Length: 287
Image (cartoon, rainbow, N blue to C red):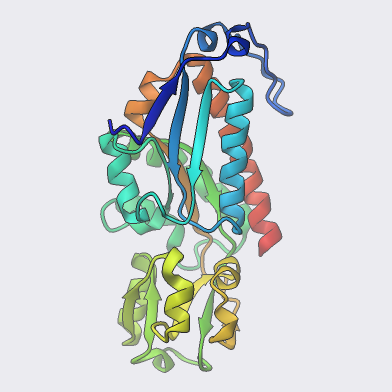
């Protein structure tokens, strides 16, 4: 495991006290005896988006809560905006143990693992209640699939419904022909190909620059990404299709997870459960 991935420092005297930290609203108490005897650990987490985006803020809150629940015995350092590594490299790095934690856009990996594309099939859900039921029905198979790749899923975080941004009016499929269509999963790639558009694969952290440079004419994405990328500066048209409600997954390397004390795992699971609940509400609020 790489040195930049996990670091340990001796626990401070205060961490050596027995702790009974309560999860906020969870009513769960854990013994600190296991944590008190373990050196303090810092885990790096590759965040995919800017600090202004609610997903990053939720991830940072998750990290902060883990630190609080373990009384500093485990610290998660969130490195946002794909500065640690490109999102496409996160899942393989987690599987190899080269990265401790990371955030992925689930359907980005649909070509390699088709099950991960299930939340981006157009129009099979039309709102958050249906999207949540889809996640509950597929959670265990997805967790099992990624566990086999050496990746442990902590929580899923929803996006708002996906709409169509464009520089010119789009009234029919043929209007997309020849346009530079930003793709970020198999669903958007398929739409671009069927319409005769030119697929351009651009990561979220590079999207604003690509739009301003004229490298994107049209894209299917959430209103949140539209705001984050300042799409309105170049794209004056928006169709609120709510075509699908995709998700991020926040994961930890199974190698790292296996080495954590039981009390730390309990703390992390509690924080993850609350982060997932927050994410769905944040997505609704942002929609």
